[in-house]
Length: 392
Image 1 (cartoon, helix red, strand yellow):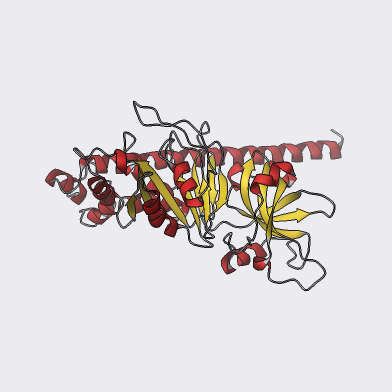
Image 2 (cartoon, helix red, strand yellow):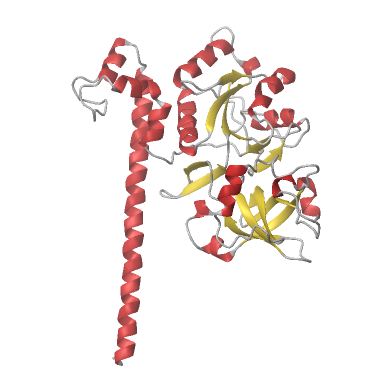
């Protein structure tokens, strides 16, 4: 229980963690969940360590009439995975930080067991490193995805475009947080200029610039993103200041911070795991390790959302299925030639579409191979059974 001390919460209930009628309705769809049972309880995953989890769950009701589950106080609980969840199905269907789960508790035992995962409302997914066709869940049930990028040597518009596609694929609402505004070279690019550049590619997305040296203004700008009962996940490269932002919002040193390298403004991985944190105002934050690379997982629809300007121009193309490459009468290519659309923007659009098309082909090929292998095993077992029956 000592290991759980740092996760213990006081005066917090499930509603403050994001439990609402929609999540409750999803929870009720889980097979075998008895809403009246004292030992099957809803919980939210706060941290994952391989197959061990820390969850926040409602305290089981006593013999008195139980008040609604969302109003019960919460406690931290160490939970393991039910065997079927651990060994069956793809890895991205297992619980991740932010997931709502059904936890089985046993009287006299300190821990619990995760029996099922509540269907996700949103899911931030990227391609897993080292596996060409496996997804990795970064966080689940996120309302807002805060894309953090430093206004120092780490500033990169193409990377922000990729994070926007990640956000649209997840179902969360994106917002861009430009950190380290005090390090922006005012002689070349002021913070206002950088904000305008990001707004030009993040069409309709809020963009804010903050400085760690003005903590009150940072709180005033970022805290409204995580009101009570809402969840914000922060993503970005190492060293952009995600942990510093979180510490300022929490009012305490909850996350370790470190210096960045001078030559490229990148940082080391001071955050080594994803974790759910509670703000003093009742909001939920999910921090995650900095990503050295972001390989997308989704389909072309999310790319069109990220590149709304390209999609808008495409309506004027001669051919409905124009790829904006070599076709005659392409309004997108004409906009590039006229200077209305940056060539780099169109190149990034093509790159993301190619990447996702390749991923789709690889995934389909693997699915076909797995299905073929499954039926071969079934037929082999049937032949062996027939031989044994016939005494052959």
